[in-house]
Amino acid sequence: ASYLLSREIRQSRRKGISVSLEAASAIGIVYDSSHEKVYELIKRTVKDLRAMQKDVLALGYYDKKELPPMRFAKLGMDFFTRKSLNWQLKPSGSVVTNFIAFPFDILIILHSESNIPIRYIAAHSKARFKIGKFDSRNEHVCDMLIDIGDETSVQKLLDQILKYLNMIKNDYQKI
Image (tube, rainbow, N blue to C red; front, side, top):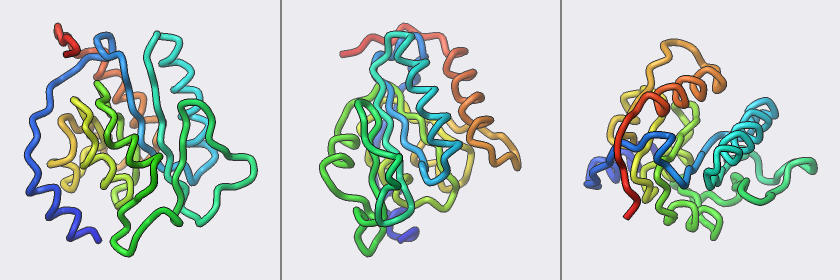
């Protein structure tokens, strides 16, 4: 699955443009929601970004066949599970298809290196600017990579991503 996805990514041609957090109106977040702490972090982040008058949609991958009873889709926070994956680990379903097709100004990618379903969504997303963790497998997926060293904390990665998005200065105009 990793080989096939890498081949698909190398064959795709896209030109991303840098977009600051200030200039963005629509932000997508794709993440691994298998851990409760990460899910709670994303809920807070979505709330904070909405307070900044941003349209935010988060798509979480839950690495089991069913969502736990306390986790359910709500406005702006959708999920897909292992049940949505085919034999190549490609996700499908209307939630995934709609997320990929939406032209986000910024797509924030939060995942561990081995998460093929999230890499698939990130690679195929129609987002204008994609930002994620530095990893050689992400070079052809992301427009900007953040190196946090050996740190594995999603909180640390998200903090760094938001820090650098705030540093970008541009006069991006949505077309």
